[in-house]
Length: 241
Image (cartoon, rainbow, N blue to C red; front, side, top):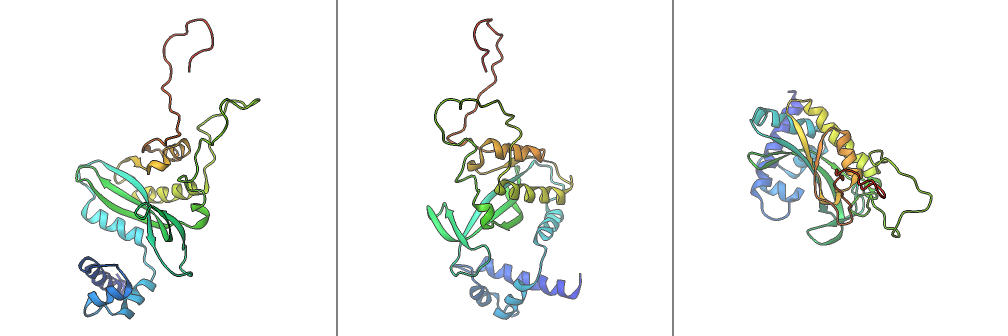
């Protein structure tokens, strides 16, 4: 590790200790007051201004302390909304917050974690801000089954439900999931992917299966799920589905 890396390591230790000790909202000013010697406001500014490969750091910590455990690992994703005032922060938009029950101005992050099934603990791997273009097509506001009149449109033909066009949001999510899988590189076996219930539709399912994972979620209220009919044909009428 070079000199700059060791310096950032010392700063990170100070910030982590302050963040775990302080009460109230976590701010730069609050961190500087709780950091003590070696954690001034200017030092914190220098730390957050530096470029750090956080995904690589998270994976390094995971390898050092958790790799090799005899347990099932699953990958999970969720959105995290943080309220933020101002006008010039990158990615600042209005997002729906389940805590407040309404849209609030702030930042929205797509979080990916590895869950230890045996310990029932989650370990963050990747956190990326959701930009406006991707958030505009978030499945929480849309559905793979569009609202329409009852019955089948005249002249429509059968289509393969496995061949779907992914929305910008699902493309964004797929890229991040693939990034984590590439970093893991088979060192641990990931078979299942846990997604928010708002993504319990066919498009999200196909996106996850394209990554050779199985989806764990819940169906949306407007989803239509059928078990295949496996009884013999009676010889009369249309064949049952």
